[in-house]
Length: 174
Image (cartoon, rainbow, N blue to C red; front, side, top):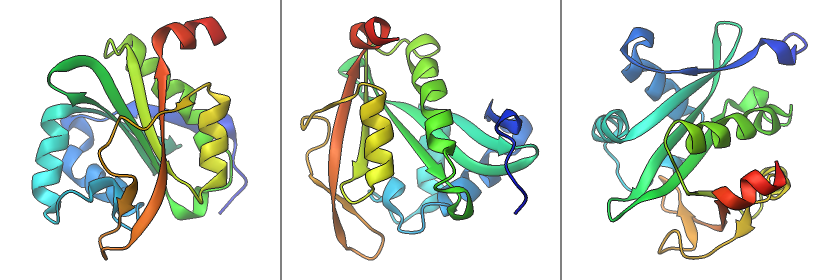
């Protein structure tokens, strides 16, 4: 892999123009442990759910898809509450792509989606992700998901930290 030029890293809205289904499948494959779709073993039904319920961005290095980010409502009863996720291709991890993209995804969740609160989870043992999330002023919050673990596609339980960011805190700290 050649040296990264951070000016070449772009977040692009994914729709049918980009062959949504194939890019989502590719992006999900970046999550080797299957944690981003742990609630189903059926990738196709998960992709349909994503298509109908989430705003999806591809993270591109020039024309290469190197990551995927999703923004979606958590609860139909609270339309102001959104969850975000970012999956980065293994060979691009540890290269500050998350630090570059998380602010853009948070901005999009608040400005494009009208979120009042944003929630995100990270494995407890993923120190870099937890650090990036805390640097964005997210606060630890345990009420976003009922479970305290990520469940991998192999059934392994991995402890997670749950975080929340209120719009007011975001604006104040910006």
